[in-house]
Length: 79
Image (cartoon, rainbow, N blue to C red; front, side):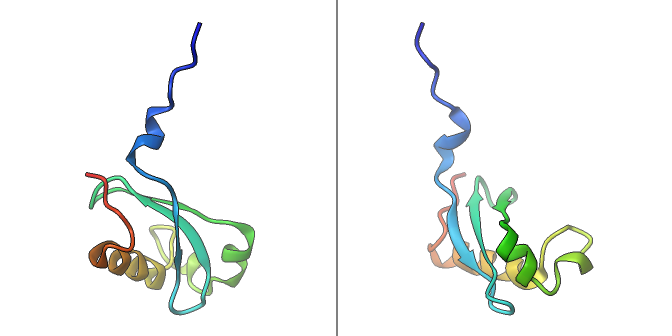
């Protein structure tokens, strides 16, 4: 029996993106323009000043940094 490749990883690696406001660095992957995966670590959660204030569960300044990274090509958008 052979192991099947995990197809969730085919849309690209998680890449670091840094928030311009608090300098928190998270790992991000964009599977499409609509879908973004964000991996927070303890240091990023501790340094983010807006994380708890946003109803979507992430920092507006970080979302802006992710959007900019995608638009400039620093963050690949898979689909």
